[in-house]
Length: 218
Ligand code: B16
Ligand code: MG
Image (cartoon, rainbow, N blue to C red; front, side, top):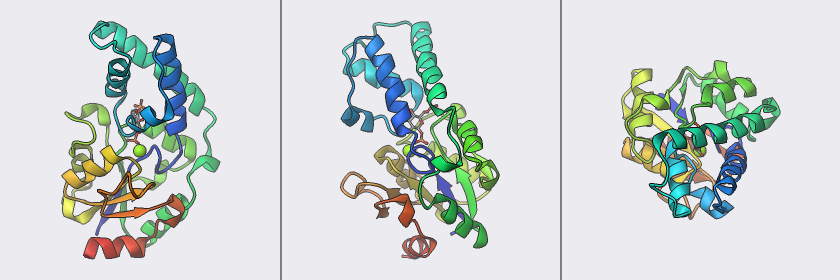
């Protein structure tokens, strides 16, 4: 095991609630109601695909031009950026800083595979930019999670084989992306929901290298 590749939203920081508030606001403007259960389906899903899913949910797919869709996506992102503007070190999820320290001490490399175009901005706000050797730019990928592209791109940027990497995710689409990349998948969250992962921790506070190394060696 040579590298750990992290998802961001839901693993490094709890930004999912801000995505939800911003999408809910945009959906309401369009006369569409979304709840927390629906929001679960948007975790790990790109901005444009999330919008598409919301419009399908509201029976409004095919109603808008490409230009209008871009305006909607921008509007959501503006609200989201406002909501995350006050993020700081105190918003790093429990155990993450200690786990990053543990990896650095063990010379295990660290990369980011977030579907979010705001990933570098958020890492900067959290004071974690220096910890990540490489960040995948999701805008250059052919397919989003659950496709393996983003995890394979992270391994390629590190110059490693997929078999040397472990991925950490909070969402099913993300776990499926790691599995499709033939990496060891570590999930953080609900055991039933994330049952496809090779190992599940109920909280980021419980992430630990020894356990993960054991899963990788098994
Ligand atoms: P943005 P992750 C994903 O991040 C979020 O889970 C998802 O809800 C969001 O729509 C997506 O990033 C795109 O984010 O609008 O900021 O580009 O979980 O892959 O770190
Ligand atoms: Mg996530």
